[in-house]
Length: 82
Image (tube, rainbow, N blue to C red):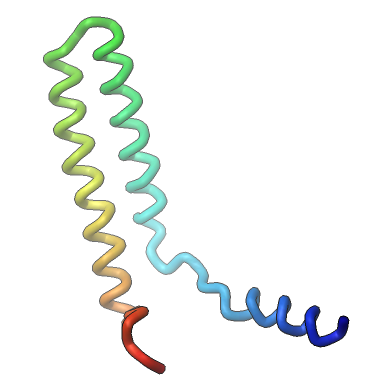
């Protein structure tokens, strides 16, 4: 039982912290724009809904770019052998 606990603790030692605080912010912003767009569609304002859906795509693309850029900057390549 002692070795199982040691293995379990080793998993959390290797846990990575968030290195770019803008990625969660981008995710929340994406969700907010999506929600606003869906609400405007439900209320019948399709022009505003379309603009918000386009804005969601832009914000989501920026968030993905931040994720990829952060991984590239810190050298987190999962395909690279250690």
